[in-house]
Length: 342
Image (cartoon, rainbow, N blue to C red; front, side, top):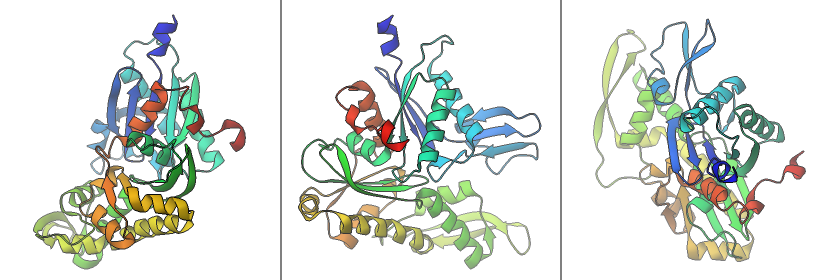
């Protein structure tokens, strides 16, 4: 019996933008957007993940596509619980599976109440035991940093809802900062800019596409232009506008500044010995935001530190949590202590 139980432990990176589920011994079996489509009249769930994301901004009155996670924490408890349950079921095809142990990643700035909500959602979704790990710690493990050594490792994890900055040494977080400015804020700043400068209304999916294809944090060698479609605020009709990459960068300036500031103030709080280590080893950039062109350049420019982008920034948090599941006993100390937070 024990053998069949062991393979069922799972790690969940419950992100604002995407949720990844890793099953022990099997790898990442699920990587879907954290979106749920609900029928508001009957309260039943119509779609989850990719299918639900395609519905954002395109639904009739009785259907609502919601993102139950906001700023890295649960905004809609019931939808989150349903989403988790759906994801777990799609990973475990058999209905009578043993209740798994579950490691869930949370932002480091999360309150005790928000943390309890995450654990509760895990238990409601069918976990036997829920362990919590802070995202920067998971990101550091996933990026392959030697977290147990007495040297300073600095991680900047730019996700969908939060940017986590942490300095880790001896298996613990020495200093950390979690700001609720990340990918979603960058999208929102593009929407606001297009509205103000061009009188054009964009949907959130279009804004995200613009950020991914044209966004940059540092001047590029070849600045290009592209057409963006939206609805004209004056005439109410669809319209196309041509914008340049420089303009999009300008639009995202404020949230980018907040992210850079978070890195600077964390460096400011770092003990001098560890700051010296970081100067040698550099800062590791993970999370979906690490894919924004020129963000590493920008941080290098502003802090004077070497900056490396993790090998697979989108999955490093999930892979870190996965290693905690695989080497449960060895890495137990990195979980947030249950007693301390009660």
